[in-house]
Image (cartoon, rainbow, N blue to C red):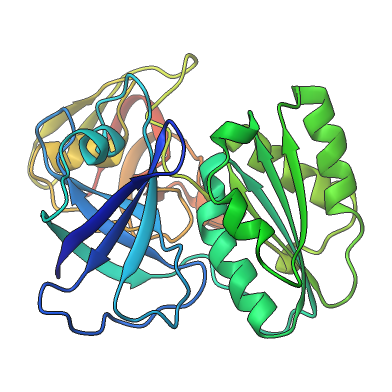
Length: 317
């Protein structure tokens, strides 16, 4: 669908909120807390692609959607386009809402851990849990008070137990996470959304402190295009004969889309499994949280949005 940008407002120096409406003023599709929209963007590569942004506004508000976008300084991706090119009145191509991060209906107590822009789905969750009369506490981590979006909205939520942690170093953050996670009750559920380092630390702490896996939920911001330890690799498509080079700072998914290879995708975080591709040969570096250990040992599937390879990767495509 196409949605019109009704307002754009700055939440922090690097985060902007975009309010989207139906051009004809019609009600928008319903959604539940944790849902996201896929927005068609034009990054610096010049190849149109989609980026997922969590819905922030209460689900009962059916005449508007609100998303918040963090500008990745120096980047050429979707956030740069959203901040630099999108104006009030523009029409955006949008898919959704979809939800790979839903609330557990049976939870009696919910612990929400947010880092930076990861507050967006958790704010929506906090509102819904509060309105349902559920016990909920939210722990919000940020590099400084000024960089933490939606603080005023959170502080105004009656019934929410809110803790804010600003400017902590790595050691202090881990210590705070250990206290926040605590021990799981039989009907407790834990939700984590934030930068990779925080998310990985929180999940590790939860496992060590005895949280059952079924009671722990998380959502990553999206695929990391590559880091210092990553290397470029080559993809061979067995059916078409096409060879594609995947740069160190590029995901396999983006490399395939840039060459016109149609690959289904959604979360871009290795959670939903939409972008699974068939592997015919090669050394896979799995980085998803969707495949089971048995799936990975089979060596014939990988999530194109986050996983990589070494050398030459052959796909049955």
